[in-house]
Figure 1 (cartoon, rainbow over the protein chains, first blue to last red):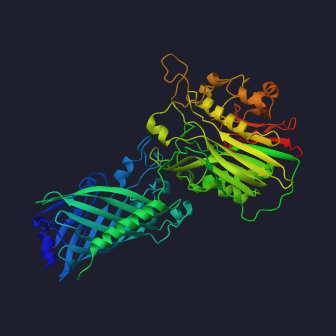
Figure 2 (cartoon, rainbow over the protein chains, first blue to last red; figure 1 turned 60 degrees about the horizontal axis):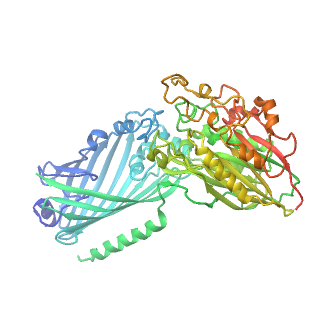
Figure 3 (cartoon, chains in turn cyan, orange; figure 1 turned 45 degrees about the horizontal axis):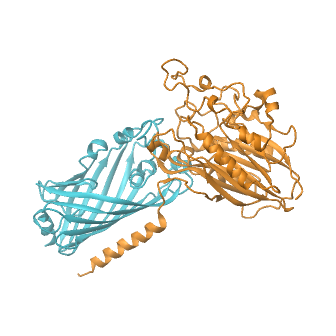
Length: 258
Length: 371
């Protein structure tokens, strides 16, 4: 029942998913936003996931396949790749905007991510999402440790290129607060338990192995297919210089189109 | 399945707000006010007997970069991010030099604490762990979570005072910012500081120690304003019955220097100065002519470890800085002053450690008066 509800969510007056879920978007429907990844429904069980802007800067695409749906539970698998070399070269520059020193050369880097995501519908407008994934970096042996951008949001998502393998755990709740407002709370943990000789020798201050993010956002359903959201993202990380917290503001929208 | 998710949501927001209050720090530490300094003193200090004559040393250690690595910022180089082995190799040379010279009180400038450019090594802890000093304090003058330029990233550079004997009242005093920078650059730029401390010897004698590092590249009156504030701080702490020692890297030449313009010595391969149409006409931080008399008030009020007459007679012997490693030191920028005369002829500019930093360590001896 809930699965059918979500498939028809673009017709609903009250609820639209912002974050990831195990549900597959209705065929030929497209969900996009500024920060969160977009999704395009290909068939009843298959959708394509990626970021329309970042696709040109840091190509990243995934396929989401729903292989289990029964009662309130739906489970999908996600398989994708990322190629960050273009973006890293773009920010490797002299002067302002140089996030990476121009002294380094960036090799062609790839990572592949495979994950399982499940969604449980507690009631018509309350959903619990959970996922577990593994990231594996390819061709990263020549990447210099000094190229890392040691900032929240960025480092957890690029650390796999320095530590070779990463695990991502995610649990979140999305639901309606009223007819015009909905909320999303999500926590994500990034684990890099396998030591890399080069990186761990260079940066010995911490283990560089754990990052966590907690998001809390409220969305205002301005139209039937468009919501505007604001909130915060609390980030914690074992950075190369030590542990640090950051609380970042969050503004985003989500738009559904056919 | 029912649950009160609104309550959970509000509780989550409240929890995040509380965590924010206790956990977050600003991106840029603007260092606007006087504050305490970071304590690196050893937990179990050795008992050091008092001495009547102290050896004082000041050294700008150039964040353990050495001189063989051409850093992009001040040596026309291409390197921004140093590797751990490069930094520790230079730091070991610096530590060996300190342990060989054995100063009783050491003033350091350009010490990095967990900076991206120096492999996130806590250099203050590194030096304290490998030297005989019991007490050490660090005061930041450039503390930014992330500098989005040239890949510099996280920055925490500062000055330090190390002592055999206990220190107290260790304070950081901010100096005026450069006024010749655009607002964005100024926001992320170094805030030069003065660091002051009281050293208490076992025989109850007390010494006020003041360390500073003035702007290197300012082209306006910044250094003059900084110097005025620095002298004011010295004057405020200069009590008649207490010995006062001060020094550091002033980035100013002695007032009777022969050479005042180092644009040609400091220019990069593709740079050109001193010709009609050259903009700027002088290289930033290399023309000392307009500021040559700015140190006079300090010479008027305090005793230099190196008399101007001695300096004038043999300037090369006292040069303590050069921009490039392949040439000998070519100017004097590092000083020691006190409110009592120094031991005659005790001033030494240790030029033999040329490859360890772009500044030479400078030492001098002072006799403590009976309290």
